[in-house]
Length: 506
Image 1 (cartoon, rainbow, N blue to C red):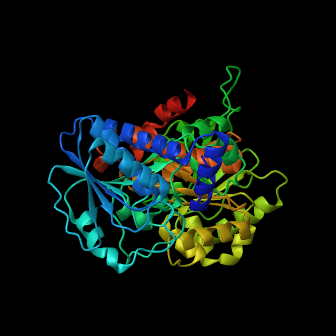
Image 2: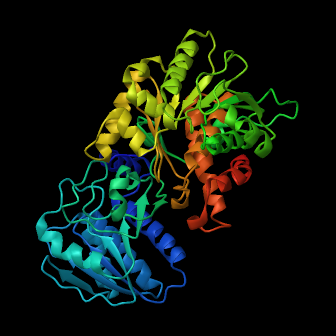
């Protein structure tokens, strides 16, 4: 799914009215009906009232139309409308419809004190994606009243005061919504950690915008859903053997951190590659053979840490390295030797670089030029900062990561609630799966194994990264249907990988 900017959303609205031969008021009615259907489904057992705060533009018009639909269905609705000299035409039309039905509209200005009832849901329809400048401090009193209420707050399209596709300074008034109903696609701001307090959750409402116009738009930002993933995964073939699905090498571990390699190796095999070889220091040999008999094991000459890599890399289709390997001098030299060896190969394995391998590259940034093109880097936030330097805000972080990927020709993950896969082309894929319970030790090791396995199965690097992040998050979502997110551990993700595949294959 393409993520549209505010300008593109406005253009899509206009093209929709022309090509579908409907008025803008009809499109507003369609959008409001989508809100109504979702709202009444989400709160079907709610017996309280709705308080709808409407601005003077089209976002306010959505709220006025929603108020009419709720009223006609028997809900108790209270409507507030910002006092202005002028209103958007469709906003005025919906005001008239309320007046004709005898539904009162209460005016408010920036000094109004609201008397919200305790059993109400507040619906924020003050400003939408069309906001072009921050709300000035005159709005602080109104926004503070909304944010300080114990009631559920629902914003329409965007929390009022939040820009759709640029950084919003949090010193300005912004509604803090419990839930946002956003039209057609998630707005970029809803996917970034810096805005988490403004929208705890969002749901996408389909308002049937013109698909031909949207298909012609550039694919700069994408939101990954199941339908995209199914195109990447080849259909099953009963005439296969274990060699068909590739051979993954998981290389890492050090004394006290062999568990990271076990998690990654198990995840790789559970993700579907045919063979997994774990390469570990000698201290990990007995552990791996005992705990994970399905893997083959090769050992480093050193007992406690990696000092080299297998001399012959030709049997492997993909390599995942860095998990638990440490940053000792010998491990640093081993990683450099691996990168130089792969650079000389006619057909080198695909590469995933994680954890301490990333920390080593941060210590030796000149080695980044040795990393094979289209390798996948999977840093957590601190590791990313070591690689690209500090950033001012999340939009700046996206841009610096794009520049980094373009410079070195690599794919880099920005891990988080909506993990971003940044490609060398500048295209960014945001993930739709996963939950807060996955913020646990070893979760990243599992992800490395998943992506390495997909590379071994010969998915293209961009496809492997996007699919791996989606599959990893989906396994976490299935896991919390059985256990509390609070108690989720990395091994649970591996356990539910087959169920995640089952959903994708359907």
